[in-house]
Figure 1 (cartoon, each protein chain N blue to C red):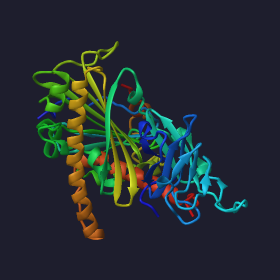
Figure 2 (cartoon, rainbow over the protein chains, first blue to last red):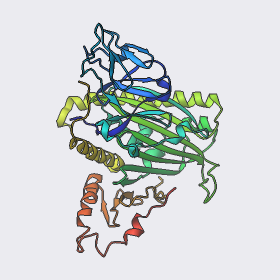
Figure 3 (cartoon, chains in turn cyan, purple):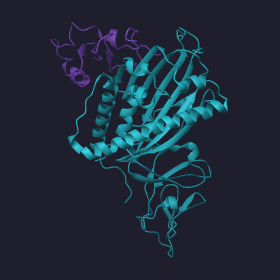
Figure 4 (cartoon, rainbow over the protein chains, first blue to last red):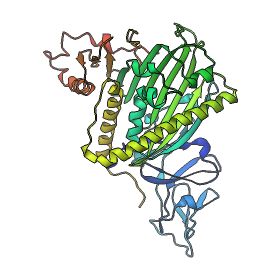
Length: 352
Length: 81
């Protein structure tokens, strides 16, 4: 069985990635092909022609239909075959699986599992990503590590002090205790670290213009398996949110990750940074995009190494958990419960 | 060190929220079951095991979730940001 939960939504792509061409991307071990129809709908099909398994993502899109680049089998948006080469009769089994997709908050989500069990209530939201009140920069880095290592990484921000010193890490991050909350019913983990008097890392000093020390809040909201939200509040020391009215003396940065398994040993690391200040300032956008990508790549290098270490040691390695791991342990446990739930269901729809 | 900070305000508002905070100026974690029963530990794994096992005792009047525990509404009604 896979290490990820089935019957869940996963981010497959950014909206802007899916245009009038064919995009091939493996999500949770499923090779998929995505395209946008002439009426704007996003389609996701299994990325294998039913005939000889040629990838449909390497084929041709015409009139909202995919024409296989090998022998010309033609599929409509439901995955049904509408033309076969050299004959009028279309085999009854000539169909590729279609996957449910939703496009919301500038993200394209795909339902991995039984397609008749799709549940829109399970779709987590990140509304600031396409809000006019925020400006967002984003990217995606391929990670040659299992998705659980990225979850571990993001749930414990203490590593910022050491792996990301000079960018987003300062001594206070690792030194400040965290509070952890878990809502069992809603399946969400919240990890909170509020620093009242902290150094301002260059990442925020350059983008906000704040000089001197800051009040720095980090509130993580993890909706397993895929969506990770880091609500970051930065303000001059002593500036607390008002009891009522807008928190307009603080800067807010919403860091979003979509943690999408590709295979058992690789992950799509979607990262986004939305801010509610300097909305039109391209220089700030460029700075945040470049610096955040640098930070993400620091994680990628570390986690790629860690994957090799973990894989090499198989079941024999020992690890130690301390107080900073309280939230990460909660995330692991929720994920394990969700994987178990998926195992209890019939096998998912897969390409034949 | 910033361990003298007040604990961050509560965030989640569900009816079955587990909460773990650090005891100020120590390495001790304090876990609260959603029924309000607390438990202290220096080991987060042991603490989670205790918390997750605790609901099994909710129907047991002699258990830690019994009359000695704070009223559930005092502990689990969380304030939104």
